[in-house]
Image (cartoon, rainbow, N blue to C red):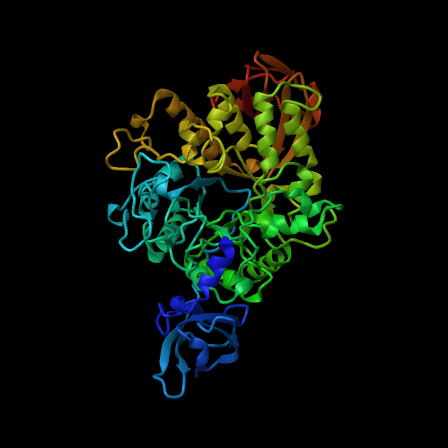
Length: 614
C-alpha cells in the first residue's frame, strides 16, 4: 500500500499548489550545431499545460508540444537546423486572460578544443574516488542550509564527511605523481535525500552538481584542470533509478514515469533470468522492474519522455564539461533496448567518447551477455563497449588466495582470460581489485604484503583498462560489512587530520613501499605502450606459477606470477615463442638486471615484471 499512497500523493492538488507558474525548464540551455537537431524541453510549472507555446528564432522550429497526465508539465519539441547561429530567444507561454510567462533560452557555441571528449581506453589508468570521503577543500560548503541532510560527522560511516570537488582539485599533483591518467568520481549530482546522501547514487537533480561538493562551474574547472595535465574525467551515471526526493518524482509527469507495483517490490537481483532460455516473463520483470531500494524509484524506460530526459541530460554534461567517459551504474537492471538506443545516441554525437558498465555478475558468459557485438547470440547489439570485469576480479582473488589445482587457484585466473573469445574486444573491459562496494583488496588478501604487490602487478600488466580505488595505494583496509567501512576518509584530506597520507613523511614505511610500488609500475605503464595496447600471450599455469607476456614490435614484457608459499623456478625453454632472441631482462620494479634467461627464480607469493633485453 506504500506505493499506492505515495504516488497518489504525488498527483494531489496540494503538490500542484506548491510550485511556481514557471518553475523550471530543462535543459536550461543547449548548443547550436549539434549532430542531432532534435531537442525536447521539460517545462514544469503550475498548470503550465493550459498555456500555448510560441517562439521566433531563425533556424529553430517549434515541432510539437506534448501534454501529459500531470497538468504541471509540457514537453516541448524543438528542431534546430544545422546552420542555426548561437544566440538567445524567448519561449513564451500564453493563456488568454493571464499574464504571459517567458523564458530566455540560449543556444551556446560549442567548444571545439582538441583535448576535450577524448574517450578512456586501455592506454589509461583510472583512479576511483568517493568525493565525500577523499578531501575537504572548501569547508564553507560542508553544510548547506535548506537541504534535507545537514548532519556532518566524520566519526559516522553513514553521515557526510565534507569531501568535495575542490579537495580533488587540490590533489591533482598526487594523481599525476602516482601515474593516474583518468579520474572516476562516484556520482556528484545533487542528492538531496534525508539520509546517507553522501554516496550519490540516488540523485535528485539531473543538471546540477551537489552544492556540498561545489557547483557546475567548479566541476567543469576540475575537468579542465585534468585536461591541462593530460588526464581525463569519467562521470558516474545512474539510468535505473532516481532518488525519491527528485523534483520530477515528487511531482511526476505521469503515473507510468516509474514502475508501479501493488506494494513495494524489490528487484530479485537475479541477472540469470535475463539470458535463461527457460525463464518466466514474470521473473524477468521482477529483475528489471523491481526497485533497487525503497528510496530509489525504478524508472520506466519504456516511457519515451523518460528516455529523452535521461539521454539529453547525459549529452548535456558531455558537452558542458568536456567529459571523456561514463561509468554506468546497475546496468543489468535497465531496459536493454533503451540502453542500446542510448548508446547509439551518445556514439553518434561523440564518436571518441567511451563508456563502460557495472555488471556485477558471476560467469564470463553472464558478463559478455551485456557487451556489444551480439557475440553470444543475444539477438541484438547492446552497443556497450566494455564492462567492469568482475570475472577477472574473482579470478585474481582465487589466484592469490586459493590452492593451485586443475581448475582452482591461479588456474581460474588463466581460464577467465582464456575465455576472452566471447567479447568483441576484451581490452575495453575495466579490470580492478576493489571498489566502493567491495571489501578492500589488502584485507581480501589477508594483509599479506607480497600478495598485495602480486595483485597490483597483475592489475597494471594484464589486458584491459586498470582501475584503482582511492587508498589502495596506501594499504587502506576493511571489509564491506557494512559498505561504509570501505569508504573511510583519506587521511590528510582534512586540515584537522593529524597525519597526511598524501605526503611520504605522513605514510608508514610499508605504506610508502606500497605507494612506490604502484607509482613505479603505473608510470612504467604510462610510458610504455607495450603494457597499454601490446598483445597478450599466456601459458597454462604449472606448479602454481602463471606466465604471460605483453609484447609489440618494440618491446616484450614477461610477467611471472608465483602463487605458492615457497620459492619457485621457471625454465624458459617452454616460452621460446616469446623469449627467442632475448638474452637478459630488467626487473621493472627493482631495476635489477637478470643476466641469463634460461632459468628464472621467483620468490614465494611474488609476481615479477621483466622487460626482456636482446
